[in-house]
Length: 298
Image (cartoon, rainbow, N blue to C red):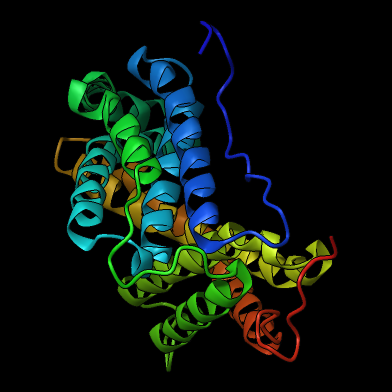
């Protein structure tokens, strides 16, 4: 990546309509690796916080690709890579949390007390991005994927459409189960639903080449909206915890209290939006089911 290149978002790989499952795995994995490698220098150099955001998205997409194609892969090696990627995310998570915190609150007093925590978290994120273990990890994963990572019983030449139907139906079922009887004010359960929403959305994008765009977009749009609302609510939960941490470091109680009230005011309309967005999601018929699924022309 050239010096000064902007943060890079994920670029969905182009696949032929008749693509095979193994080809789709390698292409999606390579796209996630490209996003990781493009943004790592910006994080290592302490540049714009957007590099960190896009790097973490790339890592999550890479983990999601390993997960959604799990039935094809040698389990132990895939699990080792997933563990190392999870550790890298952990090393960068606090920096992202403080970036969001500083953008949310303009109080000079809170900003001053947050700065020490934020600086320490950013140093950890830079150290993670600079470490040899991380810098070579994406190349290791890509070399493994291109070298035949298939388990003995795998069928990497199975039609992507057939593989995708099974995988997406399973992910949708798990998502629905995770939200059964939920009280959306329950932050812990809501977080589990958020993870399932993200996995289903990334799965839909991994397999998008198996259907026409107009078939995929209605459901994908509802998943994106759910992920957006759940992400904002998760940010509120994290900011509450960070405010509590600041309260223990002599941050002004009045400023902390005002910030807490502001979060509560933001939370209520988001919860209402979440209930509506969930109803819209469960009402739509999944496009991958046999009666609705049709391969793209070509």
